[in-house]
Figure 1 (cartoon, rainbow, N blue to C red):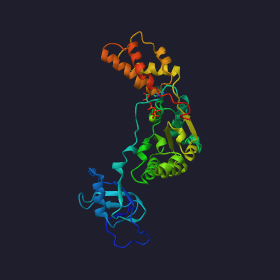
Figure 2: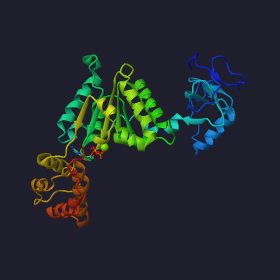
Figure 3: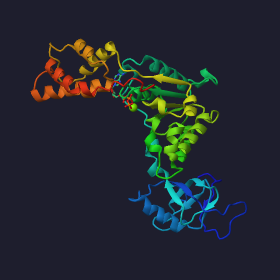
Length: 369
Ligand SMILES: Nc1ncnc2c1ncn2[C@@H]1O[C@H](COP(=O)(O)OP(=O)(O)OP(=O)(O)O)[C@@H](O)[C@H]1O
Ligand SMILES: [Mg+2]
């Protein structure tokens, strides 16, 4: 435990000089174990966070809290401490309306997902995105080589199922740095202010871990343009928080933000201008479809019958995304073969094709602009 951290173990009758007497709106705490005994121990996760909040307010009511303080549990688990990560407003008093946020329970999605199986080799086509990712990989491995010219904010866009998420995962596999995947829809909290606070926390966490990659999937859910923000008022504060973080250049050395969307036209223009590059993911062309079909049929647990003509199938699947090919066509054909017993035959592909034809995700003209 660092000496400069203040231990808040008393109710404060009077406000210390310099403190504000406004009630705390939110206090963000993190379980810190038993610092007095020098051990860390899990605080049992309450089944209901509401119950914890009630309990926290009751026992710390009247406390004036500051960032970095320790708040000690006096009742259920004497001497168990929570470290105060954030107080809004700073130096304010816990009262009956204070909302408590317990970081460890809420922030699971910030836990870095470091290794996964996807590699660049598994991704067929999308050469421009691959090249950019290799550049990011080389920056993360050797930041000095780039001086102040490092890659920073990159936008992946294009139709669903074209490999955007896959590419981000491959980059995480290739570069040996933490990868912080976030779903934009998860950043929208229940209360106004939740979203922007989560964005700031995300970047704070990234600063601690830098060099690292932040990957914000489904980006359009939060980075909506002004017109949409008028409808969804809660989103505008998130947009502002994002702008602040994307501009926080010096503090964010070694943090690469990749955002992915399939609705680029709905993005806020100020946010869009923060991306140094917009990389388009396109639907696979005929050769790429053949390659995808060849690669994935190679992973089938059953052999292909001699009559299977992947070339012909690739001609018939114009407008299919990689996901359509894998999930709608190949999986379906394989399942038919398994039901029938024996090899995967052309007739299984044909049947799967006729079932999936009307479901292809070729975008209507004008979309994904
Ligand atoms: N270029 C590709 N090469 C190989 N497989 C692909 C490719 N594109 C898509 N796939 C297959 O489709 C699946 C879905 O791809 P992914 O999740 O990366 O798409 P996405 O672009 O992120 O889609 P969304 O916009 O819906 O999030 C992958 O797991 C993979 O099986
Ligand atoms: Mg995706």
